[in-house]
Length: 228
Ligand code: ADP
Ligand code: NI
Image 1 (spheres, rainbow, N blue to C red):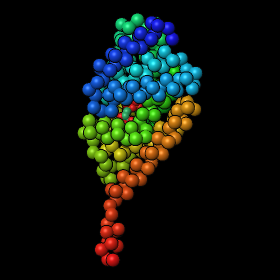
Image 2: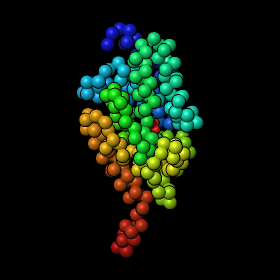
Image 3: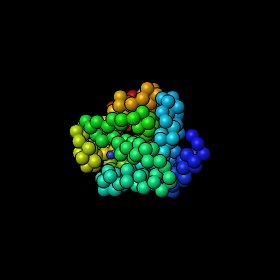
Image 4: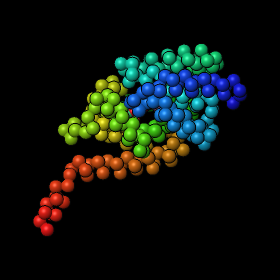
């Protein structure tokens, strides 16, 4: 990485930090910072091009469709404008825009393959932050932000066959575990990502077991105690 690339990364980090500072939906600057760090680690392990990976990790949530009435074209456009204004060369800018355009999860039944190693590295780094303790915290932060219930036993999870159906969902946050989070482990695209996802995946399962144990209550236990 040369000095001009390092300066562009610094400017980009400052730009993103300013844009996402106040986000309360689980897509704040510290999400970007964690993804950036995980992406650097994955890039080294997988021998991916670090400059492209770092730019895409920093910019991946700028203009997310969830904040632009479902419009998926806003993100890549804003990112393209930023890269041009920062003086990033055209092939790198095109590569970064393609990653940002394709990174998102789009439903259980919808393909989300990225064409390049750099894309797969950034996608895996983003998805690691959807798992584990942080993934759980972000899911309920997003749920509160979007006005979702925690859980409703009368609304079963769905396997969305199209991106449109996934985008339209108003389901409770617990459903998101079955509709996305628990599926991620087997959809990690790099060996390093797959390895790191294991423990975080197990933590989701432990959390869900405890959640349902508490949800279903202690009635039987109380009855036994009262009889003693
Ligand atoms: P991606 O980067 O795959 O597009 P998102 O930005 O859609 O991921 O989501 C990031 C995180 O926000 C999810 O991992 C989850 O924690 C939370 N989230 C997104 N959609 C929902 C939802 N419908 N219900 C609860 N949490 C959600
Ligand atoms: Ni993200």
